[in-house]
Length: 166
Image 1: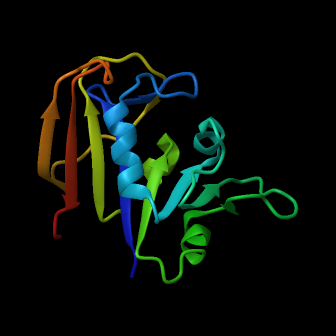
Image 2: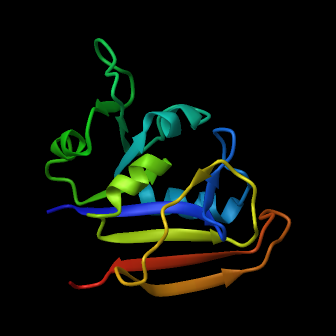
């Protein structure tokens, strides 16, 4: 069975987006995202896909959840109209990373195995939110804290969570 991981950058107030963009620039988070997800499957909603500046992310199988499937073949990515359909596209895959947006994160929280969260420290203005992380369900296994610097406009923490055994 494949492992399903959620990966997200989340402000302390749970903001993850503003006006269809990330409301911050954290070079370290982008580097970590690339390192963790390269060679794996990415599962995302249509708006998240549309927000990618250069289209499908390279060296990863991109699956876009959409209620309006394109006619014909799409270039560089796959489409699915449900998470179940997306999982069917992932036979013999070891890991899927759920990369957003808010609706897809909410749907994935009930069956994800683990989460890689970059906590962006600040009360950041936004219009899209990550679901609340329930301490009854999730265990923070590790955390590394970093200060803001010339490449990272906010202090941040890399946290790794695993689902508690029920």
